[in-house]
Image 1 (cartoon, one colour):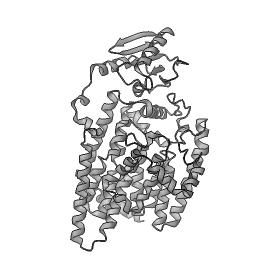
Image 2 (image 1 turned 135 degrees about the vertical axis):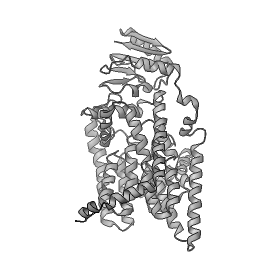
Image 3 (image 1 turned 90 degrees about the vertical axis):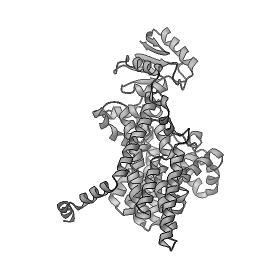
Image 4 (image 1 turned 180 degrees about the horizontal axis):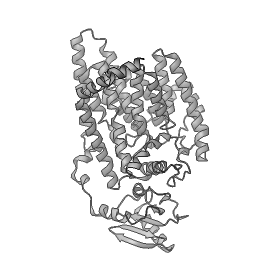
Length: 484
């Protein structure tokens, strides 16, 4: 009955329109952020700076989804990519390829997904600190270094979970439980490790007195994680789970959990065992002046930090890549809540309001300044060469156009994202001398990044393909296209 009454009066729609008109500046800012991050990702890709890990792999899987096919991946050699990471939510991007079947579609989608949390961040913060500080927090979020690092590193399934993490906090704060649990479920389906983050959402609910909801969430989330890692992913991938890289904690998830519970100081020691880890952890909290430490929502950073800093893989410790992006909306909203809790201790309302306004301005100034430093990813957009294409890149597009869409192809890593809409694509790898693939075509560039080979190995591979009967059909500006 109440729903019918709301529909008749149109009150909810009226409030939504009023809010949109009131904050149209924030909406325009969001659109600008989408354009900026889209430009950063797209021009990097057009400059052949993207790679098969992870843009090529993700694009290949989504292309299969768009054709209602199993997401097989010949790049990383999985018959079903869900056997690598359980991320079924990537299938939701498939309709984009029905509109325009190009890899650029998911790069634009990523820009939208990264920046859309500024709306729940704004609403969550306005409720606590007021309109002006909320605008500062939302603007600051959209230029955080974590978002820039993700946009500069191609595409990753974690991007899909970023809005869900922010919405889950907002819905829990509003006690809208069905949307909250829907957000948590969506987040957990973005990647198997996010089930552990869902466990800590349950801990926060328990701390807020929602014992039943919190306990059920934590138990179900940890059971789902163990099911995916121990059974589902090995079954789909036809091999054991290959992403366990925590040898200092134990040989598997259960043993690692035991180590964390029985030796917490050892965990703390590993997290801050070198300067790289320490700097990254500090930089996660610094953009909002460590405000997250004063909020119960701040404990959501624990599984994210532990996953990175307890890993044996040094790539997880750095500020580059996509690994830190999940922490961005969480620490932003936790900081807003933390400063609200601190401000409540001030009896003078005028002083409290000034404190929050000045603090939010300082946060905004810090993040704007950080985004303008020379080596920040957004700094590429301020350099003229980033907006133009050299002759080698123009020739590259000409070379790639010679490869038919239904042909299998062998290519180096930086070329694969431009060729993934086909059934078979192979990467020129370290073991190419032992068993080089016999694809219909092979394409190489001596002027582009040759990883995982070097330039000389690419030259040797071209000669090897010639000796196998391949004919060079295109050679110009360091580009080679060979046909079987």
